[in-house]
Image (cartoon, rainbow, N blue to C red; front, side, top):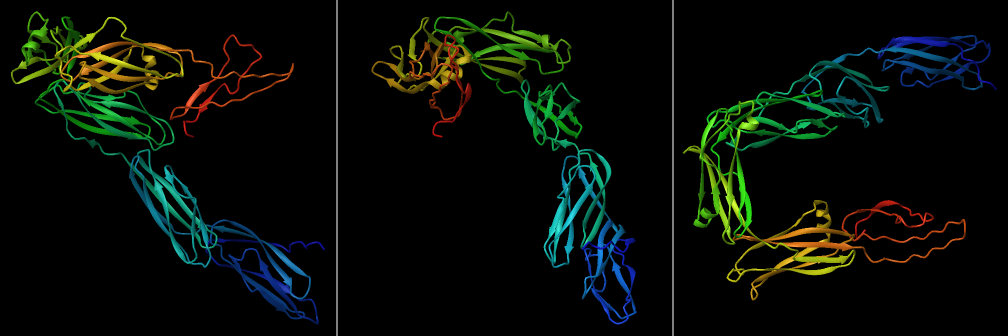
Length: 567
């Protein structure tokens, strides 16, 4: 039996949470029996009325029902009247147009640019069922969950976050709604203020040197941010790096370098970093202090030889300086080993303000070093402005003993261990028993630095007092062919260093295996074998046939990564 057509469409317009009553008239055409109806609807939360009623013979009945929508929207449903003791039923389509009618609450959210804040909003669930509030919000830089779940007869807190990236006053809306409980609307006033200047502590630096501070710039956005820089005092303050790009959701450390040009007054600067997500404003002040000794200058030569060196003095002041230089030595040996080359002690250096400062604001002071024995030499070149303000440049002279030929030639096949020994002989009378030694390897071709570091192991230094020498055992285990010249330098703490010339050579390795493979004409045959990584970290590999191999051969894979040893 086909379902009967709807009797009518009931269209109801009202406000949310407003009760509206409607009437449907029923008659009983029978003259001898009652008609009873049971009532059902698919809108039980907003539509209510008697669940059943009876009409006497030849009588009528006004069915009154109420509508109370909680949310402003359009509802569609059915209202069904089914005869209790029969098959007859009537039904109506129901269309309810509910207009939102609720009080709007005002909420102000105020923050500084790039700083996140949040508000807590409390909602209640008075029902004995779990309810879920849907959440919608409009406004830039707002974040929050799109749903809030509340257990029966409980309350919960909804948190709305605001992390602005633009200064100003803006508007927003937060809408929370549930068909059973209703809806809540919040009008948001979103205020973003600029960050105040950051005042850094006074930076102190020795006159002629620099000091650094690090500031951090954050990018809370999902895009790359380019940053421009303004600086009110580029003479004394510089930023590193010059070009700044901050990746999404990351931060960038910026170094501010202070170089004093005064010793009596504070030097000020305002450095502002500007981007599309706002600016960072830093206020700095620096103060120059009396300089201490500069970094030492090292020079070396062999006994009886002579070499030259120089120190570079840079005028830190904004005015021309009239200076004089003096060489000071602690011992007679140093006094004899070091000499100033300058023709006159007094000289003039241009000021910072001179547009040719990079050419004229520097003074190179040359000197010579000529050691007479194997020991450590020390001297100071002092540049005076006056007796109370001067700069000290320490000089350390290192005496070398170095042969002109190759002292050691360590050669082995790749993937074969070679045990060797380096022996350094000292002159009679040199005390090696109480001496402290240090040593290191210097590779002439830098491209082999990492390779040699992996395949060459140098053992602990052993003192052979009977023969007045030191021994060092080495293990050379190259994994691929190469050849490189190196210098092995051993230094005495009391002064002097010995340099051995070494050649390391790894030749072609022995064949690892012979692989036999055969196939029928026109058919493909394969073999496989395992590669083992002996290192403690993953290693990349490439595979190929030599150029003189037949084109019928191929290898798979051509490249890959071997897991670290032990995995």
